[in-house]
Image (cartoon, rainbow, N blue to C red):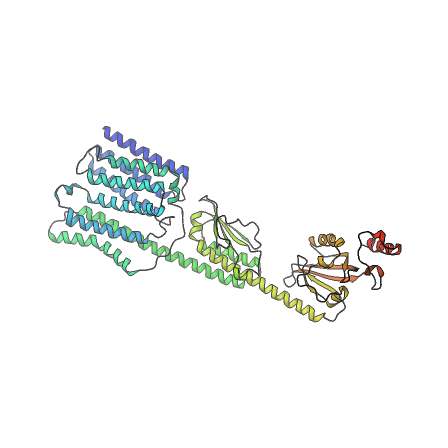
Length: 539
């Protein structure tokens, strides 16, 4: 009875430790740890029945424990951060299980005292140890994975030595299992065992398929050989091995089907988005197509989507190259941000401001769809670059048309960008200023006298049309007072700037217009000062 109480305390402590670790550390996926806690509880109940000599109930609990452990291992390897490709692991485990079955039945099974060892338990322990060792190898210095491996090795050792020599010492492996698995859940590194990563596509190889097929066919063949020999001595072992290999084969097949269906759905969504982005004529249409594509790529998975074309509010990449295709921001597995920049290096001249597709959702959801979202962001960037280049070509053609139509007119006209860079100046402006031609990088501020630049800057900072008065500098450092009437056509798809019509306020023979600005106006003659005051207060 005292042994039963000890197993109750050990099992309860380990179970509570796993539940507490899950609540404290909040791993990305709870199910593998909950299944592990269930397996510990089932093992503890089986040990209690074993201590009370209820062998049939104990065997049932041990079998349930192996089923729960198998489910936990499948969850640990499903889209985990370590085993991004579990197909090869499943193939090898299935082949190892069938090999152990053959060795046990035909080599060890009838060898005297060794026959007391439960072959089903040993096979299950070896598979558990193999997966735990693979986790440790992939994780490196991960304490939780090492503790899981230590517990699996402890259970394997006890399952081998306890039937040969029952006693407290040979039971120590089970105690190690309870303690190490509870500590594994309490250690903070347990969260890294379920962090998601992008799945790695597995190419089809005929030899791996043949290996899996041979593993599945081995248990029926062994059963057939024993039946033909007259007596089926290892029916339980064959049944357990057959169930394990069949479970792994079904898992392998379901993984392949799931990956194929997900790839097909992503391809369909990207194909639909590509057609919508090709037909988009402006940035709002591009944004609408991107939102629709995200809804198709992440169905039933809530996500906050932000589509910006000017680069404002884009979280920086802390440890990524300057032109990384995407990066994750935040360590919370339940709310992580994925940033996909809308920037293509060959087309950076078209949209130097960039932009980004920003999504916030669960980390595992973003990781599973990251590749498709990067492709979607690239297609959106191409669409935005195409729209920008089409608009630039349209503006160039519009400017060329304007030059052709008013090339011989005496009207003073300027077309400037939002940053006051002069895109077009009529020939009359060149004649007025005495400069032919203007610099390609010239701005309106370069033509305006320094005393008037502030008011010109303030005028163009506010939206809408208007009129202003200012002085323009000629090439001979003289000045001329002009009235500028401007129209705000920045929203016009073909203009994207201001159109200015200039009128000279003073006559061409006005002597004050030919005199340069001076810091001390007292040095000028009185009649010039009077005329200068008239010009100053005229606007």
